[in-house]
Each structure stands twice: as C-alpha cells, then as structure tokens.
Image (cartoon, rainbow, N blue to C red; front, top):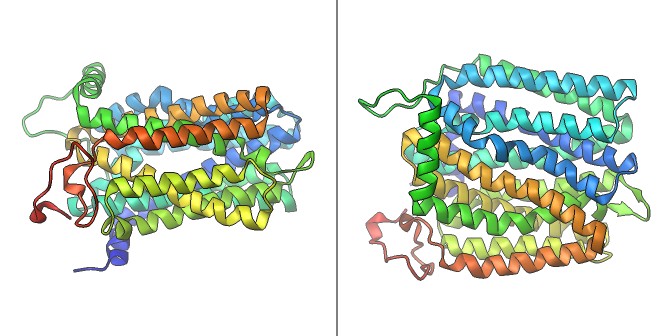
Length: 426
C-alpha cells in the first residue's frame, strides 16, 4: 500500500495530467495576481470599502452566472480546443489591462470592468479544466487529482499575492499585469502540447444539444438530494467565509495607508495554508471522518477571521492565516470531491458547474455584502457578523450527510448516515 504522501502526488507521474496541472497553475497564478493587484490599486485610488469588496464580486460573479453553461459546454465539446480558445481571450483581457495601466487611464470603473472580464474567461474555463485533469487519470486517482487541483488553485493564492506584492514594491502594477500576460501564454502553450479531450458520452446515448443539456442539468440539481446537500454545505461555509477574503485589504491597512507588502503576506499566508491543506487532506481523511475535518477546518478559518477584528501584530496574524487557509482547503476540497464522487461521468462537468455557482456566487455576493456592511458598521463589526455566520453554519451542516463510503474507521457518523461495512470503506 502506498503512503498517503505518495498517493497524493501519484497523478503528477502521468505526463498528460502534469501538463494540464501546470497549465491550470499558470491560469490560477494569473487570476490571483490580477485580483490582488486590482484590490491594492482600488485602495490606492481612494476606493471605499464597498468598492474594495466589489473587486471580489467582479472576479467571482461571472462564475455564478456562467458556471452551468460552462459545465454544459465542457461536457459537449472537445475540451482542449475549447480551453485554448478561452485562454486566448483571457490573454487578450490581460493585454488590455496592461495597456490601460501603462497609459495611466485605468480608474475604479475600468478596474472593476476588466476584473469582471478576467473572471468571465476564468469562469468559462473552470469546469473544463477540472474534468480534463480527471479524465486523463484512472478513477481511483480522483480524490488525489482533485486535491492536487485544489493545491494548484491554493498555491496560486500563496505565490500569486506574494509575487504581485513584491513586483508592486519593486516596480508598479503595470509590471504585474504584464506578468499575467506571460502566464496566460504559458498556459496556452501547455494546452497546445496536450492531447485532444473528446466529450463525455454514455454508451448508446444520443448527442445532446446545448438547450437540452442545460435542462438536464437544472433537473439534476432540482431532484438529486446529494447534490443539494453539498451545495447547501458550500453556501453555509462560503457566504460568511467570504468576509475575510473580501476585506483583507482593509485588515492589512497600517494606519491610513495600505501596506502592499503586508497585504501580499497575509493573502499569501492564507494561500500557503491552503496548499498545506490540499497536500495533507488525503492523509487526514484516512484518519478522520469528513464531518470532523469539516468542523476543525471551519474552526481554523474562524480563528483567522477573528484575528482580523483586533489589532493583531503581523507576526501573530500570519500563522493564524496559514491555519485559516488549511481549514478553507479542507472544507472546500471535501465538498467538491463529494459532489464529483456522486455524479455520473456524463454529468461531472455540469456537477462542477453547479458547485461553482454555489461557491463563486457566495464569493460574489459576499464581496458586496461584507464590503457594504464594513461601510455601514465598520470593519470589526462586519467580521464579527461573519464569525457568527461560521458558527451557525457549523451547527446546521451537522444534519447534511457525506458520501457513505467516506465513513472513517474511527470517526463518528452523521445522524442520518448508515454504518458502512469495512470492505466499503477507503
């Protein structure tokens, strides 16, 4: 039997998966460098807390609007070609952002519009990237592949903010936006080197049109109870959890001025924790039930949010952010993996699209909500309400079951989950 660490990294030994994983890493790095720089620039331009929160909304709202269409398309088309087309469009957005920044013409309106456009391209690609990485691997590697996918996203949160902050300190936001162009082109090259990825088909099934496939997806969401459970679990965690991500530029303020380096460090610490969480999840899940991981992960993220309400020195806030990132990765990765486990292959991208609606919709609404509350009530009061929401979510998710095959040999079962025979457990 392989060790937990070996099983976690096993998918990277497949060249086809490695190319796609690296391409997604470049894409994710570009996203977070774009979002971090836009957030820093918004504060530097004198934006209000509400406008700062809208940066997160602009980045996340497209996934809420387009996750289902993106998932439907990813299940119906050859995904390599589709990803190359959308990645080229994303690189064009990065070129426009760099040009406006270089000319000095970029203001809050352009900043929000271009961040929305970048989020739009990212949203159209998301389901196709995730399912493409899974499809080049054997089924038993699915959890490890999803964990590594979360590591790609999370490591971008760690490296991207730190890299963006360093570049802004040494040069300017224009250089950061230019770096996003380079990352987009690298991702495009890796896609070009990958093998074709034909659409999913059930044996003997007729080819679906876009409209029929969309109706099937909505019917699936309406009638499938496991899907509903996982989406509700996501909403209960992400809506209050979005407060820390949206308001972190304000938490990072030193007196009246934003320290770009401190902001990069804080966001990078959350991302570093998420990398650790993604890499450790396979080993942790072998010892603890999903419910226990969910509770511990939520509590860790709650502690990081609480630290933002007090005048916490940077040396103490950084490790708390690392712990919060670990908790964020544990809860989020378990949720999306559970959803993928319970979806039929021909619905897998659409199931991910539904998850992205819940996740990114919560991030988008949360960015506007917590930014507005910080405007009305102040930063500390807004974060205190988010903490109360996390506590309430910990209570409410207790009745939502995880997949029965995930029962731990040691862990406790949720009240409505049956005991699983030992041979059915991982």
